[in-house]
Length: 235
Image (tube, rainbow, N blue to C red; front, side, top):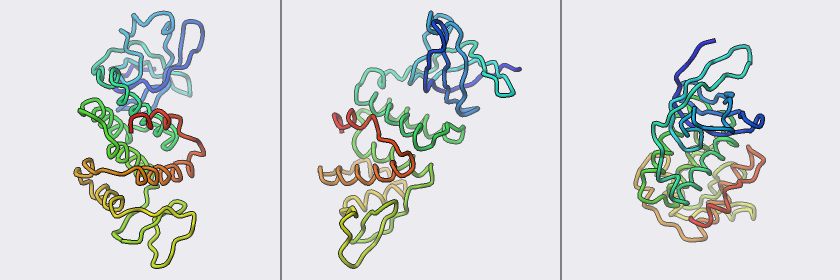
């Protein structure tokens, strides 16, 4: 056994007994790790009130081997992400981020930590999160998962199944036709052009983008997104 100092976030808290809990951490050094937090449900005094979601913490963890549960010895807040906690649309956005990571990437790896961390900072520090930033979040996670289709410039672009299709004839009824505005956004996304955050979309474009993402999402997770109804209140 050895003690490690880790940096990251609390992703999930599961009651273990009347006083204790199992906490899932997402850390820069080790990716996802489950730890035993003794006495957490009775008092957070030992953990300085830091065991909560959307807090960037420093964790002191006793690492156990052979599949045994590691032990959370102490924790302290480095960054409280105040705006996420206090602005409803940012909180929903951050909850959506965690849901996508859980259901698309399935594993919280140290390689994926950098984007998760930068996205939470973006949500917290932005004056206002908007619909294009929601699209960037979703498509980036699909890209990390290796299932984001490549897009080429075309006036006749459709989406079907899990790929973009270019046609010279009439599309089939189950295809989603994308507008020139949507195509330009996707091309800008591939080129990592920051100007795409200034794009505007009408309600039809938002619905077709939502359907496109839902098809990709469901094809790999087989689950519905629980945060969608909340997102629709703000975006």
